Length: 274
Image (cartoon, rainbow, N blue to C red; front, side):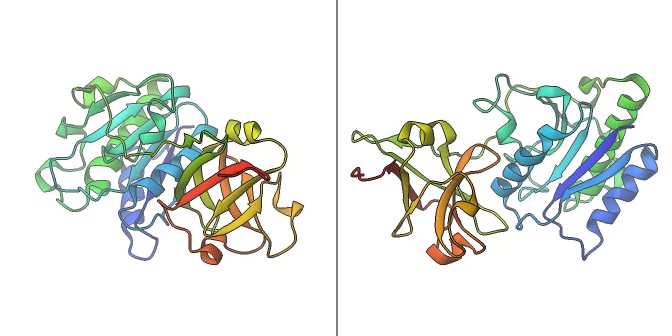
């Protein structure tokens, strides 16, 4: 069994996801089709990148992940297929959506090709300029699944020429203060209102067992889990992806503090000046 996963900003009300599934099933009916998410905010490449980062590594090798968050659809932006670490295959626009599968987050650049060989598209003579998910990415994902089912491997070179480096969205780097604290910022706000920062777990360890976080004009403790504070209390925890998150037990920290991507977050040992 080979699985094709879908990640989009299409939602589920308009039939766009259903069209992609129909194309995949028509080309390779043996492939299983699973949804990662279709609730990415419209054109939010960064949010899609984080969603993929949270889920793709846990799928079996040989899974094909088709991600369509494509603000540049119809423009000269590249369409790509790639083989990432651990044998995962990625298909989608070269919009930066696969940023977190590239160095420095991985050891090597994914092997990638541009999808210029139109024989693998749904119908080269009738390709929509606004729906490459249906007409380019879904069919390529299906053909990849067929290759994997028939041969146990896929030759990406048949889809087009190599791409030496994928596009990345800018990911700001945290900095260490001279006084021993760490300054970062919010990267993403998840469904629960947790504000994911660019402060890595190892810096939390450096700050010590009594570390605190300043964000949105409030100071809160760094704790191991949400239940270490009372309902309604603010806190900071290291999330499952290994980055520090500003949270509120049983509530939205983003709403409480007015947090959004780009806003500053400071990590420091308790009692130490920033």
